[in-house]
Length: 76
Image 1 (cartoon, rainbow, N blue to C red):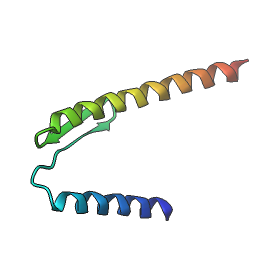
Image 2 (cartoon, rainbow, N blue to C red; image 1 turned 90 degrees about the vertical axis):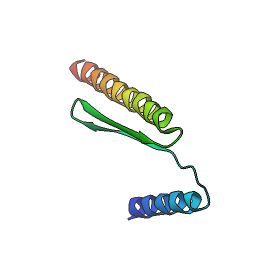
Image 3 (cartoon, rainbow, N blue to C red; image 1 turned 30 degrees about the vertical axis):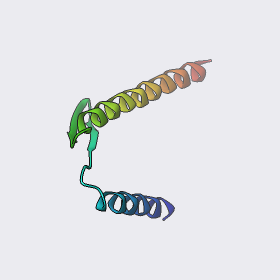
Image 4 (cartoon, rainbow, N blue to C red; image 1 turned 180 degrees about the horizontal axis):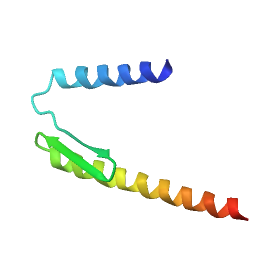
């Protein structure tokens, strides 16, 4: 329930913030298995998309390192 409220509040903030401005940039990445789908629009869209790819890659790397470390401690 709290997660849904946070998502709705974030959506409301984004919509409210973009109403008064003419230039809005969006960008992101969606990982479906090993295949990334990158999107971006607006003046800084590709910069935001690149930032999303870097953050997503870092998250995947941290997940793999965490899993590797957990498997090493389980064997001991």
